[in-house]
Structure formats: C-alpha cells, structure tokens
Image (tube, rainbow, N blue to C red; front, side):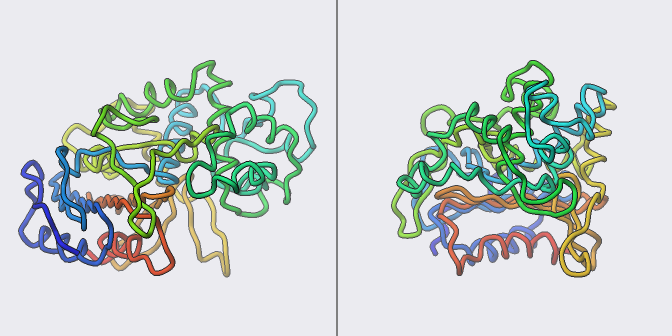
Length: 353
C-alpha cells in the first residue's frame, strides 16, 4: 500500500508516535486510512491509503461509524439519567407506547437492557431479512423505517428473559433511540445534538451525509465505490458519520485529556458512568462491558473500545481511562475475514506504553 499523505500539521505529536502510526497504517489495505492517537490531549494523526488523496484532507472527511455510533447513544442515555429525565430501569414499552398490549417479556425490557444487549431481542427483527436480502450489498436498511422498528418491538417475542443473556442487537439499541425520543418528546437527531454533540463541540459529527466532497467514500472488497449508507429506522445503532478529529475530541472527553473537558455536572457524571463495568459474560465471565463499551485488561490498565462497520467502511474507537490515551481509526474498505484493521487499531491501544 502506498502512503500518499503525511501526518496533519495541526496534530504534531512526537516523531516516535508518528512512526508508530505510519507503520501501523502500512498493515491496513484500504483506499483511505486514518490512524489518530491522543495522549493527554496531544494529537498525532497519520493519513494514507491506496487511493489518491482528494481535495479534502482525509482526517477531515466524514466516515460512517456503523456500530461505533453506539457509545454516543450510551452517553446520551447516561446524561438523561443524570438529569433525572429517565431511569435505567424504566420499561421501554411503557415510554414508547403506554397501554399498548405487548408480550410479558417485552413489558419487562428496560432501557438498560436495550443498551447492554441483554433485552432478549434478536440482532435484527425477523421481518427485516426478506426485504433486505435483495439489496444486501447496497441498501439493506433504507426500506425499514422507524415506525416499522417500533412495531417490530411491540409485537416481539424475546428469545430469553430480559437481563439473563447477552446477545448483540442493533434492533435493541435502535429501539432505545426511538424510546428516548418518545420519552423526551424530542426527535433523536435533535436530542443527540443537544445532549452530546453540541456540549462536546462535535460540530463535524452528523446523522446524515455532509456537504459535497466532505464524506469519505466506502468501497467493496474489490475496490468498487459504494453510495452513502442509509440506516433507515436503525439510526441510534449505526447512523453517525464523523471525522477522526471529532472522534478524538469525543474520546478525550472520556479520558479527561482535553484542556476544555466538560464542566456540566450531568455530562461529567455521564462520562464517568459509561466507563464503569456493569456486566460480565462468556466463559467464566471473562468478557467485561460497561453500559456501552467493551472492556479488556492490558498490562497498562483496562482499555475500553468499540468497533463498527458499514457496507464499505470501518471505524474503531478506544481509550484507556485515567491515562489520557485515545485511539481512533477509520478505513474505507468493507471488512473481510483476513482484515487487519481492528487488530491493528486495537494493538495501538493495548500495546502503546
């Protein structure tokens, strides 16, 4: 892979960190690659890829986050709880459709269950697949709007009793988004902007494609470009687009590495809350999760992270609480079995002293 750009001038960092990121980028095969690292608020950004750079610097393009959108949903819920507007144990069906007859297991599903993938709901609604399969590689979500997500939830028959098993679910987190919008009487996009994006200064984080030439273009494995992803009614689970620089700002707020860390008590409380372990799963309960992040141990302390992928792009967000270290990675090629993207980004987070 040919590196066609240099580290951005507004993120100097150290020469050693710049070399580390350049070496890591060389292991990722994608038309566009951005690796960004912040240590105590001091940033180093490396951009490259197999394609020629466009008119907008790669670190300033908007990348599709896919499931890496979920930490934003988690922070939003935590802040609304800190403000006393909702509770983690509020039942979603009661907020979303008061009085509507639902299955007893659905009635027991709380906001916490939805966010922590313990609701008993499947990854996607059962009736999602017939309409998605014919457009699986181009637009699987666009014809499944918000009202259909809500109806699917209200008529669901959960596979397991809520709170008893962990099963990753885009469906559940999407329902959470619609439930919070209903509970606050505020559209999801407005609510997220008011409670998370604006307070953290994330002006380049969007829920839809940005102005012309500002969006990164995703690619299939063979390099064929793809149109921007339409997430339909699954907005909270995967609709965000952001720049690597904005994503560093988001992570710096979690590690307290930015010079202008949030002072609002409810936002500060939410940022603390989403880093606290709340459940364990798997063999011998080896896997730890916070409300919204995966957590792993390392020789340098615990790391919190979340990855995401869309039809033609990938993103990775991670940080080490209390150390000021944060890592962002983006790439514009669809994930495949031998892909090194997540492993490379994860290594920067877990192996960097």
